[in-house]
Amino acid sequence: MENGREQFPEPTPDTYNWPEPETPPAVPDPVPEADPKVEFVWSTDTSSPASFSPLGRADATGVTIERKAPLSLRLGRLARDLTETLILALLIFLAVRATVQNFRVEGSSMEPSLHDGQYLLINKAIYFKVNLGFLDFLPFFDSGDDPYQYIFRAPRRGDVVVFRFPSQPTRDFIKRIVAEPGETVEIKEGLLYIDGRVLKEPYINGPMHYDFGPVTVPPKHYFVLGDNRNNSYDSHSWGMLSEEHIIGQAWISYLPFSSFGLVSNPDIDPLGSDEPATPEPTVAPEAAP
Image 1 (cartoon, rainbow, N blue to C red):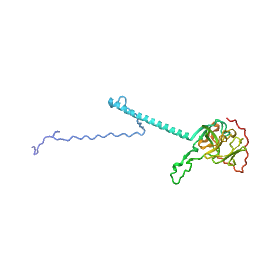
Image 2 (cartoon, one colour):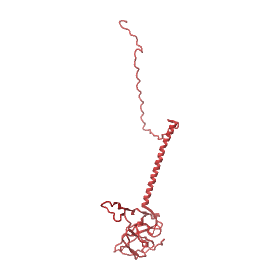
Image 3 (cartoon, rainbow, N blue to C red):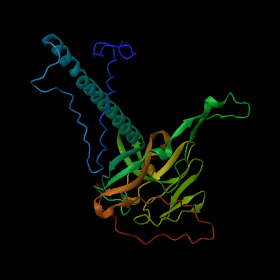
Image 4 (tube, rainbow, N blue to C red):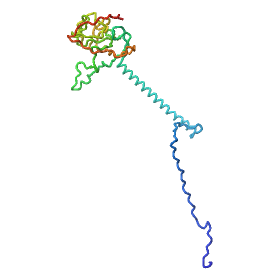
């Protein structure tokens, strides 16, 4: 003790167990903001570089096999799409064929309305019929004796129709309807009479040089004549045309281009008794084929 004070030894670094200073946590570097002028392009190439293979040889082979699967899937989808397209095209073709048919005029029996070699489109849908017998179970419906009814309308006078020739169904003829079922037809003095009334026909090639009838058209039959009356093989020669032989109505002329347009199918009614019954001016008939 010196001067009344107790003496202590000088402290050394080992005298106290000082805690070591803690290392401050690392502060992450700030993420740089994206430059709005930089465009990022995502690559769709999933293949690895040629010099890089994270898998062994066996695993790499497995990856190659799996990458062939999408190609086969695409081929399968392509085959399915082609099949659907072909089926759709076939259905469209059958639908068009069922409603429209082309026809070539042969001979001069329809002069001056139609000419030899002229090509037409025939509207088959206009005379479609449907069997309404399946509705007979309804208490308020009766299909009658003939359940087959026309969807749009029946053939009528003035229609130019294409039909299978009754005596030779493999041949198609084209004529104009002049009398409907139940009507009486008579041809005399160059004029056509329907139920005793003169039928005015501006489309013919001159008055008729023959007489016919009177004859009543039976049910479901029509009386047809060519517009070139004196050079036409038609109902005045071979009889009435059954509706079951009618294919369709002449609709559009498309060849030659000079004749392009709708075929004339006028709705003509017989004239009244007060109309003059004078023959049309005679036109020199063309030679029949």
